[in-house]
Image 1 (cartoon, rainbow, N blue to C red):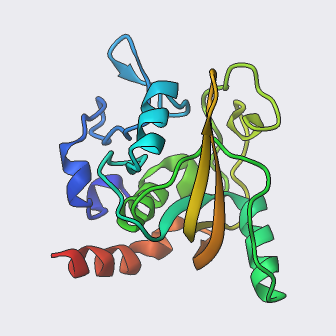
Image 2 (tube, rainbow, N blue to C red; image 1 turned 45 degrees about the vertical axis):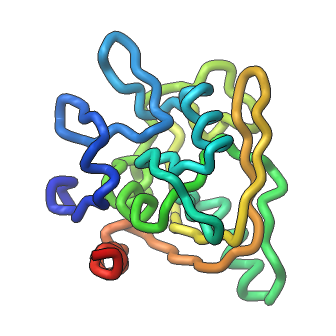
Length: 193
């Protein structure tokens, strides 16, 4: 689905746009006037964590559940835990911060990497390690992704990155293609109007 056809949460309407018209997430760094979508800006991410702001729109997130988009491996781990009636907690920290439900549904549908299982990353993360391995050039999202709601999150701001862990799954919305979330996004936006 073309991104122009995806209903946009109100908070994203105020975000700067790239040359194609894509809204630029709050944590995205800029280089030479161009957003670097596959990377995360340390200072922007730290501010979002410290001030409990959405990593997509930059707006305040009230206490309560937060959402994030996960790839195939984490989606499978969550699905397995839920099927067995076990709690899920991502023990391996991630650099991907939380956001509003509508913003994460939107991001899952609009971001080419998040939206399709065959999409590949176009930019390599500097100094890839266990935390940044998924951000390596050419990495495929693969399989079933998901938009996941968590009861809460914790974070650590280090000198070089901001790391997140998420607790207590409260909603699990798996997808092969994120277009499947269009009815959920429309319902979420209608509920906010």
